[in-house]
Length: 307
Image 1 (spheres, one colour):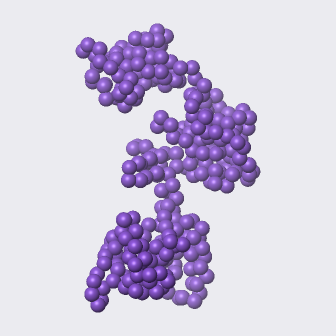
Image 2: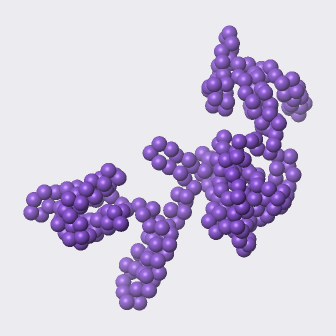
Image 3: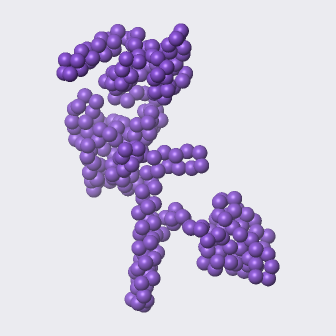
């Protein structure tokens, strides 16, 4: 009740431009002291309320304030649009049409914002710098499947380039170590799995509803992806790549050794580790494991051979 009254006060102020405290108290059947308390709540929430004293005084908001579309749910927007469409025959002007267009546009913008998590202290954007729309098409299908408990058919390519088609019940989207996954039940493996979004080549929403099975995504995240064996890596490097190494492994994995630095870490996925180490070029020297040193040497020889 309190939230609806506060929101009602805000809408009243926006619609009337300037409203007296007594009018708000009478309209919402509360005391003038309660009105003042709710006005303070709006101010603390970031609404730029202006309080003017005197005969012509009252509460108003700054001209540049706009009501964010997130105040309305998708169902509420749809209901408003339906009502506006029903009213069109009685109003020959274009106002109903213009308002409908604005609401549809706000609804589309809200859909886009579903793929952006943001607060005063945390922002997560699913897109990349070079491709802001990356993953959003896949996430749109996955989110719809999650919201409606509908199975999907996905084409997947694993780390060994094996292609497969799977029926899958998506439960949640997961971000770990900067990589996006979808978690759910895989019918091919008859078990819960994490699939990398980057390896999903296509997604198709079926018409089959599913019932959620008991599961624990947090327990799944304690292990390592694809069940790859751990690799204990140690390498020396120059300060020219210090920032890159710390960004990759964290500052706790790095220590100084004479005029150089040394990094030690337990990593997974040999192919990815090899590719990352090669990206540092001559700025690093791998100490262990030996097979990783041999793999880097072999790769460099192949590069020279193809040059």
